[in-house]
Image 1 (cartoon, one colour):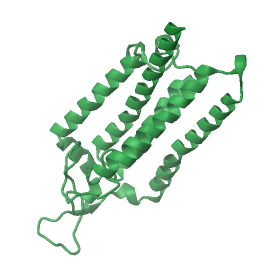
Image 2 (image 1 turned 90 degrees about the vertical axis):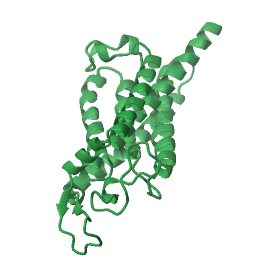
Image 3 (image 1 turned 90 degrees about the horizontal axis):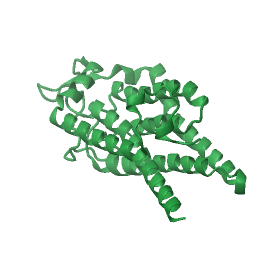
Length: 260
């Protein structure tokens, strides 16, 4: 369970052109991509509106408060099969985190020559990325303070609040707001686990994990729970945090080697 960007097996499912040489390169690229996408969604909010409108079903208002009021639903949000699928996916990061904690505990039971230092380091990076990204930055900070209403809360999609673009903190959502998606961040974290799975298991697990990782934020958009920007930026945020922790760990490791 060793992450080495420079020596990933050529049989991996990731194209060689997409493989950064170091974790620092990966972090810089992902960090710039995150801010670039935020700028794109902020400058062109119609992207969010167009995608949300694809899943919105307008309906006749039963008791219209104003002439221009828009009523309707997001049908996938009321589908019991889709909701069950979402609930199953919702639990996956917690199951994976519990498994990683158990693996780290087992790793710490070894001492001396049998202790796999790199494996323990990668497990701690993965767990640290979950704590810092989806838990602290996304759920406890951004979603609590951003104020961006979810699509189904806005007056454009049957709600009562005004639409605000991605990155704006001017919305009137009081808590558990839309920017950015916590479930998408957790899904992005699941995707990061591909890089700490050793071969030959990585090649077999990469496609299923990647598929589920993309389906989770897609469902949130289809349910009217998040805009596309919330899902994309939430998903990508975990990759940024994961790469940052990995780069920091590698820098510290290299410094210790140079000093010894």
